[in-house]
Image (cartoon, rainbow, N blue to C red; front, side, top):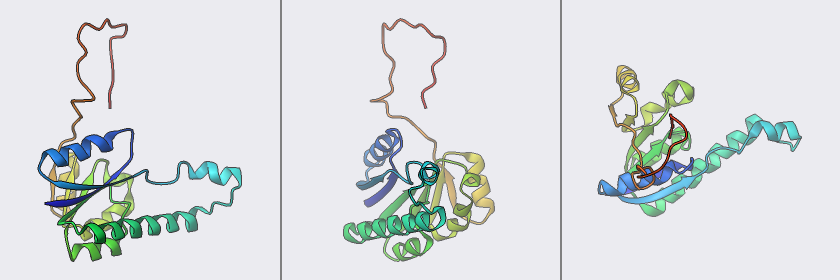
Length: 171
């Protein structure tokens, strides 16, 4: 199955997400991009003329159009969009005519209020959280639990390593 995977560049997590899709038999055409401005508040403070409302809206429109154009070239059977902010509702509606649209949530919907309104445009949603799945299903949308994971080629035990701390957090 030909799949466009829209994955934000985020500290290497995009690599294991794409690897997981490939290992599960998808013919993946990745669309990996750092999402958002590096820091719009610093741009405003520096006086570079960044208008939060106008420029941010233009950014999302341009990014959505770019992804839609990419999909029109690749002609996927499936598009999996991580987080969903990258595609505007009209783009999802148009893409839905030619492929299955899936939203992959790796954060709470409450962190992205506009996403709740966008759920209706996707064919399916999967989430890292059973509570989020219950919430999404209670709103009348189809969702399932898909636990997060890690790349065992990147994160693995190191034998014979002396430790100098008692706790280590990776994630």
